[in-house]
Length: 414
Image 1 (cartoon, rainbow, N blue to C red):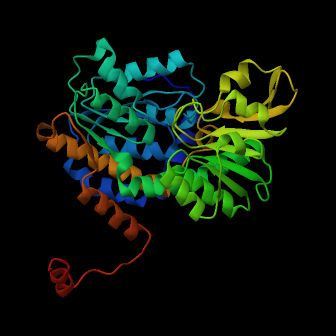
Image 2 (cartoon, one colour):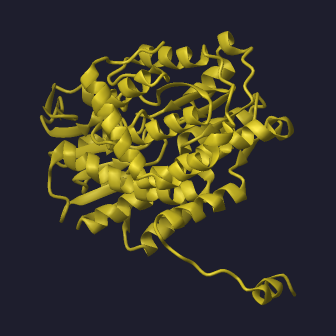
């Protein structure tokens, strides 16, 4: 059983996109190829709450090839690619995802995946894990463990752990070096530029771009904007990151100051109330706002979409909001949701191959080691992280040095 937008043309389009992505995800394809004869996931049901993109379809199809029963839903109401959802459903994957869900429909889809009684959960933002922990309907699910894909979800899982309510082990895939150093930085950096250009089609060169947050996502976004010729201003609350942004050559200002100078705004913090009504009212006319943090809480979208004098869609995924008092126009990308996925297609397949190789290997690790893991949160084991890096280098035909026996001996001597 699945619930997706239907149509043979969608299925065929989704299959073509899947094949394109898989042909550029050699790392993940090789990992699946090494394991599929053993069918290590035979008899295991997996539940996925991820952005349903062509790259995600390679992970889900790979899990099926390894023997798993797979159920999936979208990780955001606006990021599902309907052709991919239709293709996955046609391949026997229980799929509950379509673009443009209401919050209630989004919730229902997560519940439908959990009704399949998955043994291991793979989440992006922790919505499925939160429901598995705190919805009494799923209190008796026998979950062996879970993996978490993104920074916002990691923060939520840590909060559950701190409250002493974690029910099963969770591997923080986002914390793997081969995930956040590449997916968050290079993947989001490129896909954010893609989403903004598709939505607004304005020149980035010479524009003052305000990047809120200088974590790995913010670093990637700021670097790509600089590469396009933008004059970048960074806002931060962490003194070390603010210092790093300054040393990297960016202006660093509080949002209360940057809001008066910025022409394009990109929030990358995972924190609520980063751009408030007070900030918006001080922005120049025709400022463009968007968010690439996981949740739509960084920009005051209620003020823009519900309290403006008028709101109209002037381009796909771009709303023109005319402010009530000043009649100033401010433009919002993708309703304040993930601009790189709502207005574009998300990360390129090459970088997602690293993230999803970490995911599939972490799922197998949980299956083999859950009894000894306890109710803990843990990083991806170092040997998995390094194996993914080696696989990535091999896929890119990059060679590296290795230590000689004498060097190894020297490295361990005092």
